Image (cartoon, rainbow, N blue to C red; front, side, top):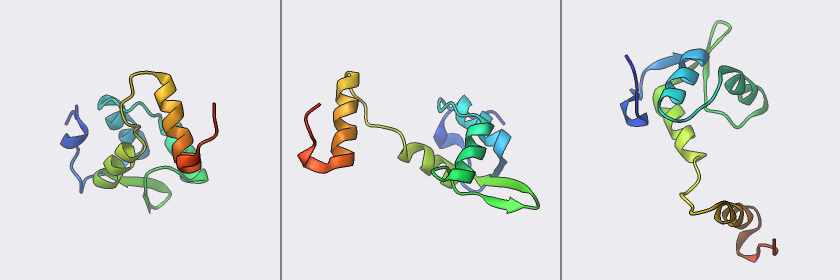
Length: 96
């Protein structure tokens, strides 16, 4: 089945690392299977389970992860930098 939006990904379906990368990329969230592998090692990626030596990702938690790392819309790159500063330093963000 071809998925075109995150909402079309079944929450309880399991995906291999390669298929999850393809599904997320098709939904507009470009990521490679190598990036998912790196994030599985270093942290910061979607939760996964192991089946033998293969990583399996469930649709629901993967969608939640993808939307959680998505920034808020901004009119320009300066707004993104300001949002990141506030996230990192709180309301007392140092001047740029």
